[in-house]
Structures are given as structure tokens and as C-alpha cells.
Length: 383
Image (tube, rainbow, N blue to C red; front, top):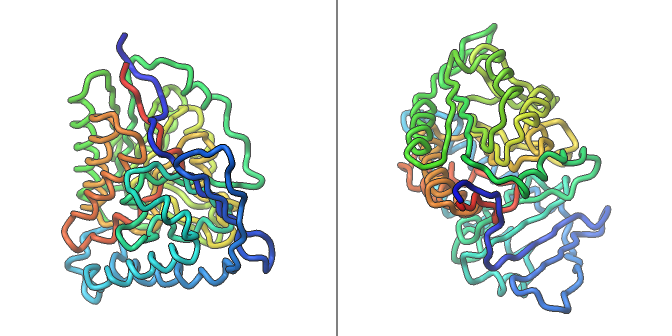
């Protein structure tokens, strides 16, 4: 038999659930260790107010904005701070966050590397930079295959179509790439060309076409019009939907957040409905701020992140503005791991982050922008 099944990779898997226990009651921390004992520890209370952690988020925002103000080559941008000069600050920030939140027993269990780590947080805590926690040896998202899940309130049920992932045998994996490096100007909006976004799409297409039982369709620039993208998503099914280009995030009204297609913006509401019809397993949105959430309101607002998550797909997005070259390098390494080597999703994320981190120093902070909402153990098992 040839083809693929969506499956879950075996290996040591730990799980963290973190939530606010209530107003002025600190945090509730639940840890499920890598070895599942018959007697499992209860949730424990951490006498720390979530508001105390806001300082970490504010510091991170300041550091990332000063080092990478836009998805472009910032090496020639005057007045920016060298990321190499603030690496120590990022590491210290991650170390403080780790020590404040993760109890010593859980730290000891997580000390060996190469585990799967599901990190569950409630909606009010999504904006904290959990991927950048540092255990004194390495950032947690580089040490383990790290994925988030959301203990959400009021989110629509996941579509039943996502259950097909577990029962269908796929003759091939079908990927839709939407690439808009040079969107048409409209009104007052002027978008800087993203040279590496075109190279990113070409790299994905070349990587996928070289593999057996893979199919890729690329909608680039004028072909990525709103009408064309709408028609393709309505008519065909894809296991992976990938977007590379610009994104708009409206902090005041996240429902107005959108991806920038060639001729029109693709708003959150349309994304939620049309992408759901295509039934993807994974959505990769390699653009600025696509997984950003609005402070404490988080997924209670109709942000881009929620639009994709409510389709039932797993989401790979970014928490802040990305450097163009690092975004392309992330994508190349991510797909080589996920599809070329059939590695689990969390391992493909690690490979992509490492490739982005090895991009020349102007983009070194971009590796930390990536976030996975989904199970890091998922992979396409070749039959």
C-alpha cells in the first residue's frame, strides 16, 4: 500500500496546563510527566498573579520591535538595535519566566531534551511568550517539540470534518501555497515588495515536487486574487494551506484583521468559512503578526489566530513582525522535515526555528516569533 495516514508519533510526551485560578488567587498549574504513573499529582497553586508576568511581555515587545521592526531586510535600517546585542536580555527574560511558572519537580522531569511538550493555557494567558522560556541550558521551544493548546471558553466546536484526518488514507498530500510578495496598491495602502516571499513559494514548490505522492498548487501575485483564492478553497480539499506575504492586524477590532491578497484583503470571517471548506490539517501563515492576540482578550476576539483555529486545523503563525530572509529559511527547513523526512509537526517547527536562527544576524530574533497551535506529535505517516 502507498499513501499516507495522519497519525501521532510515539515518544516521551509531557503536558502542562496553566490557568488563572481566579481573581487575586494566583495561577493553577497541572503537570503530566513524561512517564505516566498510576498516581498522578494534582494541580498545584502558584502564588503568583498573572499581572506580574506582564512585565515579561512588555519587555519582549520592546526588544523585538527594536530589533526587527518589519518583515524586510533590516540590516540597512538606521537606528535599529542589533539582535546579537540583546540576546542576553531575551535569555534572561525566558529564564525568569521559566523559574516563576514551572515548579522544580517539573523542571527536573523536563531537563532531558527531545520530548514532546503540550503547553495548555487559558485565553487570558495566550499573549505571554511561553516558547521563549529558558531552562538554563536552552530555550524550551528549541529543546522540546513544543505545541500550544487553548483551554478556551465560548469557542465554536471543532468541525466534525477534522475527524476525517484519523480515518482517511491519503493517496497523496495536497498543498496550496498562496504567495503575495507584491500586492496591488489600493487606496492609501502601499505594501513593500517581499522578494524572499517569492523565493519562499518557489522553494516550497521545488521541495514538494521532488517528493513522491505530493501535489502542490501555487497561487502567486495576480493568481492570488480574492476571487481566485475563494474559488479554489471552495472547490478543492488540501492537507496543508500555506500563505506567505503581508498581514494586517487591527488591535482595536481584531475582526478586521486580514491577510493581504493581490487585489483585496482576506478578512478573518472569510478565512474561517472558506478555509474550513478546504479541510486542511495544517495552516502555515508565514506573515507578520498572524498569531498575535490582543492582550488579555486573546481569542475572545475574532483575530486571525481564532479564524484559523476554528476551522479545526492546526496553526503555525508568528507573534511579531518577521524578517523576510528568516521567514523563507524557516519554510524551507519546516517542509523538508515535515514532508521530506516525515517528521512530526513539533520537530518540523524546531527545524524551522533553528534555520531561522541561523539566518544572518539581522534576523536572529525571528526564530522566536513562530508559534504552533496544535499537537506537536502529529505527522504524515507514509504507508
